[in-house]
Image 1 (cartoon, rainbow, N blue to C red):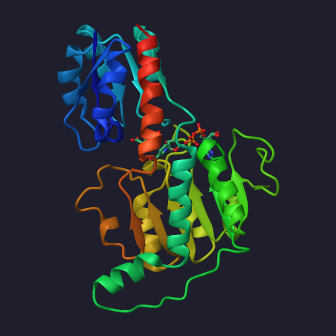
Image 2: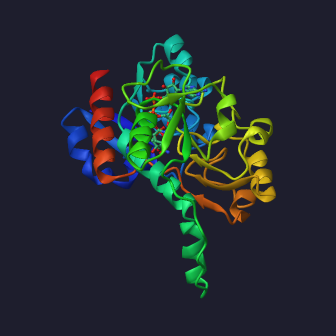
Image 3: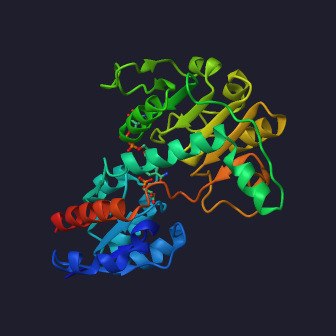
Length: 308
Ligand SMILES: NC(=O)c1ccc[n+]([C@@H]2O[C@H](COP(=O)([O-])OP(=O)(O)OC[C@H]3O[C@@H](n4cnc5c(N)ncnc54)[C@H](O)[C@@H]3O)[C@@H](O)[C@H]2O)c1
Ligand SMILES: O=C(O)[C@H](O)COP(=O)(O)O
């Protein structure tokens, strides 16, 4: 039986469902004590004692893999899609087999993105907070029909977002340098970045984070956005310069924002974003449904077992 450290929070939330499934495939799961991620030092201390690792959003760096391999670690799987936290090159150099679980959460994360778009359009966050505070606010929202929304990233999540928002009557304009044409979505408009932002009512980030797109929404691009733009991010925090977004929210140039992901997670207690009234804040939980976690975890376990 191979001992496997598990560090991804959504899988840990339902870990009891997976012990038997893993054991039938020769893996013994060991849940880590973790809120969002383990630090590099914690990983270097714990991982050498395990044969395998099911990775969350932890810093899976060269140092971590080198240290772990000096102990027992011989294979790993990134639970989920984003691999921006994982040094695949280091694994290749060290001969540690590793893979992720793509195409697992398109529907689930898209559902959250659409909920965020509706929440921002109708200012549901202000109504909820107002009623709880003893008030009865009635903000005038904006209609979604005929509004223009930019979907930044046309992978699994972005395509699911695009079709859902079209069904709500929105004009969807997509930017993704890695995808050509309409991606099989009739009526989808394509545009260049950042030129596209000038006439968009909403910006929805659904792309992978890589070394080319850190802070792709920065102060300069924000200044080119239509006044009153609403911003949604369900992909990765570092795509947006949070300090620039806070300034744009404070000035009113950005009407509001809904963020499932942040530059640092969990969001630090002193982050100015916590003080932004016109924001919906998430906990990097966009993929977390019972169904999706089972789907992704079975895939992760199958893939890890396949390495031994
Ligand atoms: N909030 C959550 O809980 C959650 C859950 C799953 C995934 N994610 C994030 O969402 C990302 C996308 O997931 P997916 O399943 O659609 O992945 P995917 O691999 O299917 O698609 C990613 C797309 O991003 C595109 N892209 C890369 N750089 C870009 C850029 N600069 N501008 C526009 N597009 C760019 C790629 O060409 C690709 O088409 C993941 O990489 C992950 O970081 C978040
Ligand atoms: O825990 C997570 O990181 C997400 O729920 C899913 O993983 P991903 O965002 O890295 O794909």
